[in-house]
Length: 97
Image 1 (tube, rainbow, N blue to C red):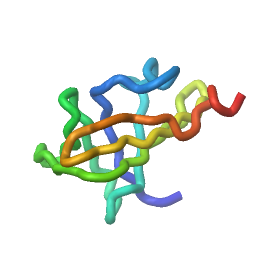
Image 2: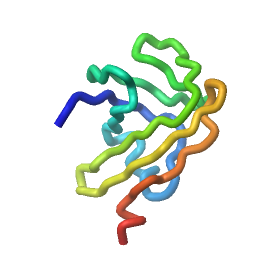
Image 3: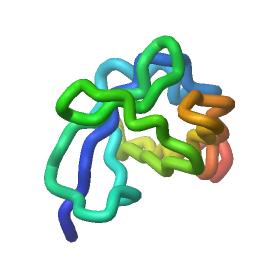
Image 4: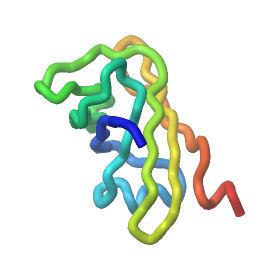
């Protein structure tokens, strides 16, 4: 197990993951030096760094959670020119069934 960062999600998630959005710790290893920092995908679709600055992120951010009731959710958030375009489920317990 390695280091990771956390992602707070203020936008709706597709599928059953939505009911866990505000209660689970979403993790990512997509940043160059994971350091247990907390990033936020804001309601207006920005990716905000721990210092509160808009990262103007462009690309995909993978994040995931294994919930307290033992369900796995993994998503890719697509950002274009600093704004969230979409969030797609990569793997969820719904897709495993």
